[in-house]
Image 1 (tube, rainbow, N blue to C red):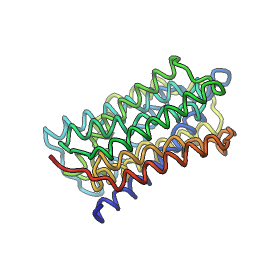
Image 2: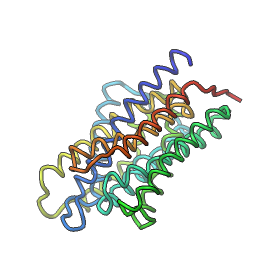
Image 3: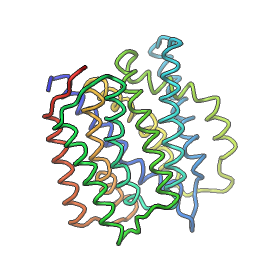
Length: 297
């Protein structure tokens, strides 16, 4: 692994750490069916509007170049994946499932991202790399299945929304990582947010809350606006650009367990030795995958 790839892994870890907080604080913001707070549509679109405002200031201060016609096409796919698809579907789902439940489903994301990126970027990971990816994903899925007796993990509407969100995220991550190599990671997410503003602004306006929400819901809204929708992508896309999307995407295997750890203080959920054991096993697959070669075709 080159120094650039190693640095990319660290940027990727920083981004994943910020993203891991997303599901617990989303649950905090939208509430439960018995105690609803902000609507899922407002949370998803409102955070995009706030991040778009920050993006406009960033692009103006840095005198960023206007994207080309071809770049706008790629930015549209980034926006579809990480500005609309993933935030909206997760925000709608999180009112009906616990953060620990949703976190395990994010375990399918690394393999989806790596597979799509390998095709897009004409990269050829080694069999050892794919073995690590499949093993890590299998551990996460196995964890979900073994937990089903305790957490009631079964295919309900919220699960389908979360799986759809993972598909959208894979598209946004793969395209964003590819575009970050030519136009810079910060500009990719900033322009994608600005491009989305004509849709996100009216949707946020018409879905704004009609009654008071607790301060904790607004704290969750503030986090997903600043970190999940903006600064997290600064680190994540830079990591993908420097370390390669196929390799760095495997760091996402840590996200389910980081999310569970964060859910303990934020939501009062519990953690046991069973979860810790699976977490350590997933960490091991990530460590091993860093040593596996990824070649350009």
